[in-house]
Image (tube, rainbow over all chains, first blue to last red):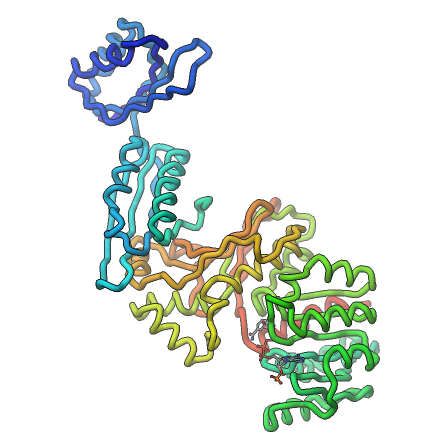
Length: 167
Length: 332
Ligand SMILES: NC(=O)c1ccc[n+]([C@@H]2O[C@H](COP(=O)([O-])OP(=O)(O)OC[C@H]3O[C@@H](n4cnc5c(N)ncnc54)[C@H](OP(=O)(O)O)[C@@H]3O)[C@@H](O)[C@H]2O)c1
């Protein structure tokens, strides 16, 4: 199952290794690491968000091992996509490297392109794509849309958003 | 019986529609105590003037057979300055660059203390604040329901019927030509170019459709809503605009398979004025077809209020002019 885990690292070298070691020990598949270098908690620790694919029965052991290594586990929760939207892109969608864009969204770990339909009617005609993006929360969805928007502007794609999204 | 003397400036589709509606509604108007006397009709070539009231049926007939009502070589401004009347009905062409004859007519009307009812967006998109101030200084009524959504009530609905509600936003389809093109592209799975050609043949799109399809017409209507309903001082430059020229039949079809249509949506709130094609769920109140216009007002107390109606057409648009006329002079 997919799990998101918020942990806090002490601001000294070698901490990340201490965090990752219990994960590999229990064969957790690390999907994303969001390391908030700039942020500090009031306890002067560095907040890190992990998204993992793990066996549910290992959660408790991983947590214990992390804390044994001096890492604070603030929150563990099932990582579920609650938000979902469709977006249409029109232009030279394929030439402009749609895969890069998808990868960039997927890399966030909190949003994912789950479906894509593509239509390329001819060489000199505009292509159209309809993609569905799932995201953990509204904020994550907005982040994914911001990525898409940047790409659309750069590559001169028309982006058609749902009416209820704050464009 | 109260007599309202008026001029009709611009005698094209809408000016003639107003004349027809005044003829049709003569008895009704009398029943509410109003005699509307048209003392001058003006087109681009000149005017027919009669201080006792022109014969509207004759004006319509002469316009339709001879192409003009011109008997005297008078312009709108000259009629406003030289012929006694209370109300100017302004239906000359929209010009959003200079304001055109409409702007001059409105300024002259307020300078001479006349009321103005108009269907002409141009002057309102360019010089809203100046015109409102001139009307106020002169003690004149200034109404323009017909400029947004044609027959569909929106300005008077928001400002009068919904009075007291704080309004958060208005979203809708304010251009019938774009709605027609997008509706037909989906129905026929045809290209934008082909359906644009069909629309021109049917007289739904103008010979130069740029203002409609690039979203400029919608943007101008949003500016009028922003200023008259949300109290902003916006002009066309404050609107972010994307039109429909890039929309493909494939995009429409893929969206439809997922339960959506693509519509050119205009949106105005205190924070933002914005026109762009958007995905609208098939069952959404804004998913109206063909040349229809529609608008949803998000209100504080009443929730969402949605109105839909014909955004164009001579008689339909004249209906909005008539409602403005009754609002000014009825029951007083
Ligand atoms: N058509 C619609 O459904 C609709 C809906 C809502 C709002 N509107 C707005 O209503 C206005 C009128 O539209 P329309 O469709 O009736 O346009 P139209 O058919 O082109 O008619 C314009 C009229 O104005 C006259 N005119 C042009 N320049 C003039 C001048 N300098 N002085 C006096 N008259 C002049 C024209 O004279 P000639 O006849 O001699 O050419 C014509 O009679 C426009 O501002 C339009 O945007 C139209």
